[in-house]
Length: 412
Image 1 (cartoon, helix red, strand yellow):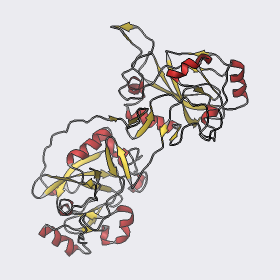
Image 2 (cartoon, rainbow, N blue to C red; image 1 turned 90 degrees about the horizontal axis):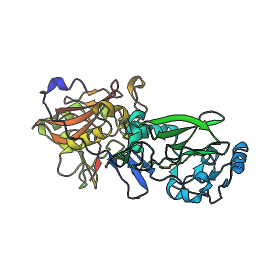
Image 3 (cartoon, one colour; image 1 turned 45 degrees about the vertical axis):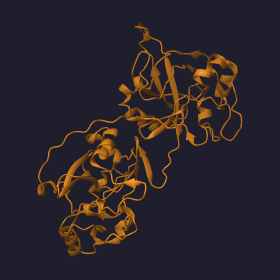
Image 4 (cartoon, rainbow, N blue to C red; image 1 turned 30 degrees about the vertical axis):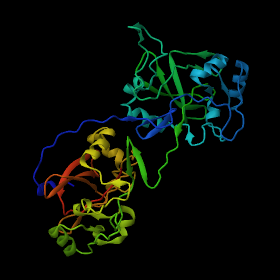
């Protein structure tokens, strides 16, 4: 929305404090990291989701045989059941990939791409490892009673150094390595996995033979109920607002022409319109509202929700890595001009719904997505957030109140 700034004064603003990015779910065995919910313990099941038993390999011969025949198998580290109390079980990839389901109901084994979402959120592979490693249990030199190999576990992932079992049967690396399968195959004989080291703070992405025994973590299935999405500790709607009545049931006037839109602005009256005054755009992009509708005391947002303040928008963008990085994560995967789409890793699903200017002209559909905040800058203008097709960032701007922008809601 580059042309709006030329019509209004330039204001300075204070950068808001960064809010915590890690929040926990109510299940003490789960942790919410970014937009994902991970189990905090290694998998320790001996049956598939359908109730059928997963074969246990109790010695090297049985382990090798399972790998050669491409059959699922699990084992305890060192074939000692005591090790499962802390470390869980080791599984070959044939168990991970079995159609009967290794993960409990409501969960799945994370794909290679989902592991990447996790490590990217934690600062990339070079920084994520220390945040993922448990605070104890890792080997290393000792200083002030602490081992150098331990992590901070600031992510809550609680990665343990379980080690692994080679395809030929031997166990290795307990105390020094933590290795977890992904559900993604690399080729006919290998699959992707992630690895933490005692002597490093990185997360290694690599491939391993399918008959190798590694730990398994599970990821909660993504649920989007009533078009809502959890982003950090906030709950946002994932669609643009498309209501034609206030919360109290009274109708919001619709502008069907330029004259009606201009008149509403002059009289400071609440109004909505469809892009181009054409209802066909509403099904996909929602409606465009002036700020007088946003601030109307009858309530624009549905019960249980409100229009996000400027501060709440900042919490969102800081959670997604700051303004320079958040836009790509917020933009929808399709629909943007010249295919300048985002990856929508936040599930915000930002669409380029365009703008209605104060004179009733429409601009930048497929190029710009702009959303009101509930925060005024002065008597005539208010803050909003802006995604643009050619940019990866999200911009914090302000414009006069009789512009028509999209609206998102946030849960009370």
